[in-house]
Length: 128
Image (cartoon, rainbow, N blue to C red; front, side, top):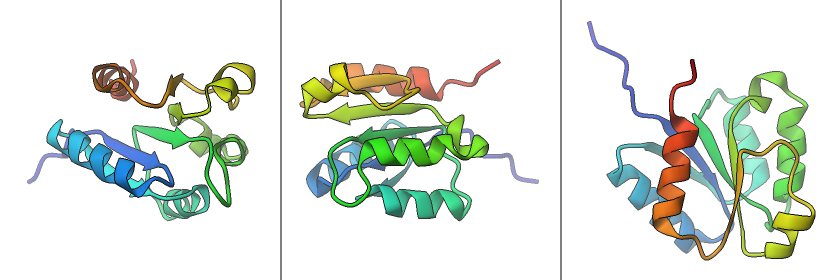
């Protein structure tokens, strides 16, 4: 009998392929399972196919479905609305004046790696 894998899953949504590659490498080395996608529509498809990450790192400014529209789509589905969301954005004005609703945290790009790792660790910690 095998034991379930306790490593949390992180879904990273960003249209910057280089950043996706770097975050995938960093989080994999930290022991997380990582799924990366370049846009909100792709991420929604993965979630509708059954992916249930412990948390989502979400870029705001993306072509197609941006971060705000993605968050609104998740909030419309109770099963998906519970997934913690950490927003990453290079548009600091958006983070302060118009953040997506009900997010765990907003971080400005460029991202401080130690802060990001701390936020991910806190966001993926088991909840009582």
